[in-house]
Length: 187
Image (tube, rainbow, N blue to C red; front, top):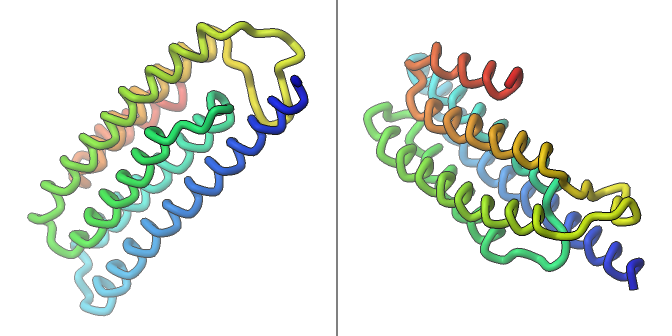
């Protein structure tokens, strides 16, 4: 029975990693297509928005992978995955605005709101994982069974990443972006 559960857990992790990679690939397509337009028009001032968009993709993808490898297991969380898809849609809409700086802020605020809702939804998942019984036999090569210390570290890291995504809305707040990155990396 435990082997079946481990196989289901590994399958769910693979589904999640595939989904995250595909949706961030779609978001990268929109960013790349709009960056190509900006470069062909020689709109150098908008390049900072392309960099901010790339930072959004890096943060979202890395946090999603860490989240998947630490917390995701059977059963598949459809609500969580639907939030990922909604975030990809928000990124795609946001990245269509990289050439129009005044149009960047409204979609970035909406995108940040979706990310915060995902964070709230995931906190429920973290609490559920903390309440599960843990044994050394539950550890598999792909899945890390969280303990209270790693979950609190993960929660703190998620909050830092959420602030980083919020700061990335405005590429002119570089000092806040770099301080958020430092806070996320060094605690």
